[in-house]
Length: 368
Image (cartoon, rainbow, N blue to C red; front, side, top):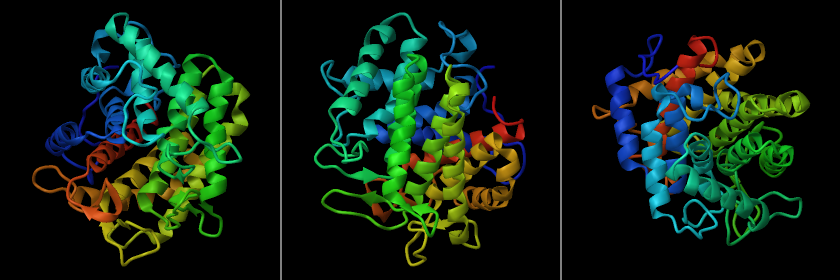
């Protein structure tokens, strides 16, 4: 199966023209490591579904790729990143974060695995260096949780989307159960630090010189979707039958977050920037990410997740209604300042595409 860009299977989502606007805005605006990394994963999910972790195909994919799976828009991003990268850099990008550059890792590893020319020569060492940096150079909390920052041991909910999915993918393709298990372990450790047990959702930032104990909506979406990406990677790896318990934990933990978010959903379907603070602004980016995660979870565990779907449908309708005439989400958090409202959000654009890819796949029976 090749590029997948069909219109949504039912009413309530963006039109094909809006999707093209959303994608164009994403590609023009993404610049930070986490934005580019999220863009690559989103494009794999929306345009090249068989290459995404949300697929039924085994990892790794075939080499070389068939012509109908050329993933050109993904390689456009990774080639640009690699052309600007110092070959001696320990990370895929330098941006001050220990965790965010790893979000590019799945696409970089995929490029290495599916190409025999320039990508293979440069991408493989870069992916290997990023793994080594995460496992051996980044500061850790006393229990072993890998810091999201380099200057201090600080744990952000965002990191669950950035780091464990890459470690899991790298472990799967190198057939290293140690690295694959580290992805699961990092999520388990982060959950220990960040879960608000009574509310079932996560705080944003723990440890380090300052905290954000607020229930940041996007952070909860990052965490849930990161768990599901790791789940899918394990399930498609050669260790799938040996890691049944870990897969069950990941879906359970993701469902806990998504279920915990629902009581905070506004009547219009949206979430506020901080879930339990209606005085904060409406944030459509986290709303789209919530819907995307629910649809993915429903495909993995349909019997236990179907009760979440009405909330996802409300969220999807809100997100669609909040697109302007140029395909931008109007109510979004500032990607560079999580407590402030922004004007244009590359990650918000990606989340809409994630939502639509997940919705489309669920309607088609689960995964491409």
